[in-house]
Image (cartoon, rainbow, N blue to C red; front, side, top):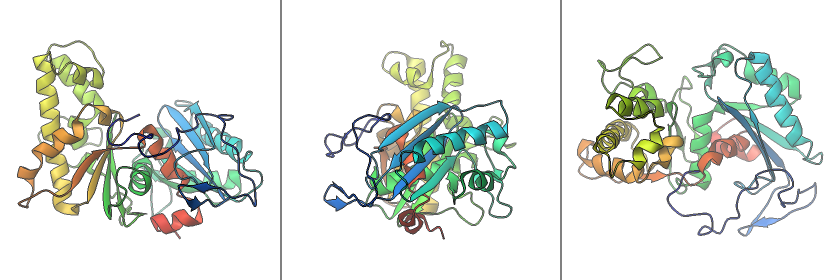
Length: 346
């Protein structure tokens, strides 16, 4: 879970329930409770985060960030599209079985996007999903409406509403992990763009003559800022095979690690400065595994002012507050009536 900013105890929040039976009572129809003085709607919200290695599901009831129930299961990679659909359906069935028959909404975050033209998945790094009508198939199997959205958009939504971006009218959520992605939230609504690719800054070029990217172009932001790029750079500098965050841990005593971290912060600043010059967000929230690197937000922000088309930098760059939970929590808010107001869905 990402560190930085206010901790849960400082914000007066209880720790997230990790599994069924963690002590949080289920709320049935007609029952109401209060959280931070706000009356809670007994409608249940189910969120699923379909990741490359795991599927996570939560059940919410009013409290926007504390699940009543949470499950995690491995993603059946390499077993075909139907196996993934089966796994998501089984996850949702397990969660809605605990909803006491109350009304419930379902949102699913995926590592890709749904085409507004034909309704099939595109740009997914879980390749079994590409070209498949995932939303339609889930709705047929589950017998109700399902909202499917890009996982970076779900992250951005959760952080904009209840995390590090709270209070900002325009929030840019950044994913720095195995890949690089992003999502835009304007006035509390996901902004998908005309083609469903808004926020996909990871495939803008930092250097057109740079290393090849899986998308077919060269020098994309992702080729420099993803975790594997950090690991490769350290190996090529003569270092051991280490995970990206292990390279950061060596930065004070290994000059090679220091050079790589400094270069990473400068490139992150360059890439984010392009976003600021176009979007001019109030807040940029860093997420993904690399966001746990010490002082990364501060390091990037330090290099950004000289790159902006402005005489000052008012955009805040912050580590996330919701950690690994942000994506699944944002997914839970996609499908309900309140979420339709949040993200502009009809």
